[in-house]
Image 1 (cartoon, rainbow, N blue to C red):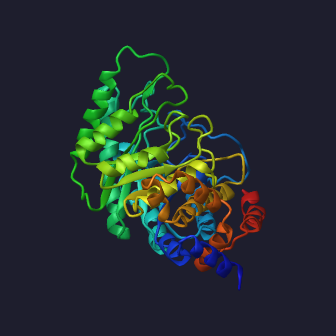
Image 2: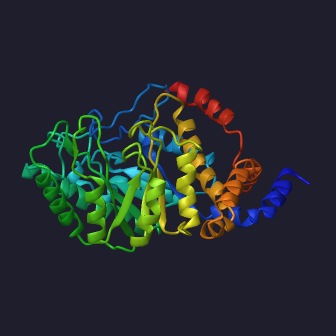
Image 3: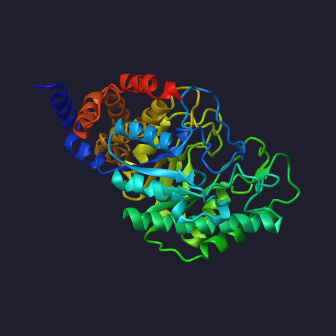
Length: 410
């Protein structure tokens, strides 16, 4: 009996069908962010990162051109198991002598990304880029009291809706378009209502533009604070959840965008009760929204458990969102996405009997079973999944070789 067959029998004794778990995971799509490859720089602006965003480290080999970024994505995707989508920011528009500012972006500026995605049989998700631009005035965009500034960013949002629908039409896969703004104040504001009222007005104007709601899912992402925006954030959790519910769009939770004592895993079940779909940006905050590489840690596992135990794999849009320039960027990509998939498999290998034990108030048995599962031969099931996906288990030598042959020459 090989290791998988032995592990399969051990899980069977716990009431878990490992074949079902593997097959379910093979159908799960994770949307992979493009911005890990170039430190969130993009191709449309020479502005420094803004909006509370910082990338730390200067590891050699950063992608500098669309061609380099696409090559790096290909390499990273080859080492990630399972279904994937490409998650783009608007700042990654590709211009061939036809530069357009963000309020004038068109589908043609993303045609090369569409060709890239179609050749690989995957869809594209999208994000308007409300940062790192001269029209971010006094840390404000859609909530700005300057009507010229606010209108510029409204036009950007409308342009992104059209581009998102273009992605969906071309790839045949619905596009998740996520709106997040960095707006806020460093110190205590005199007026908290005014900026939020302007943000609401701007969102209303963007969403008044016609788009196919079966092809484009608009999501709204909140944040607790950012660097330079420590005292007040316009797009708070309360604002974004209230707006999403009232206007029938999808709430998005980034697990770095809350107070350190708040756990997104605890919020998922509540949102599922009131929303047809929800969206997640999976990251690893260290004391705050620092976007570290996702690990196979407790909160990542709990997030995955909540999705699985609530039978919500088809109701949750799962995307990654982190960027680390202190280590090999390809390794950061691959490690983080693998850990999201690993957490989902770990959750799929939890027996359904755990809920019955809780409902029966048999907390003694529940604790013992949960502890026993921690030392079950999960790694053997993971390796079997990788083998069926045609992805190598030991990926570091591949990454080291790519660094030596490609990244070191940049």
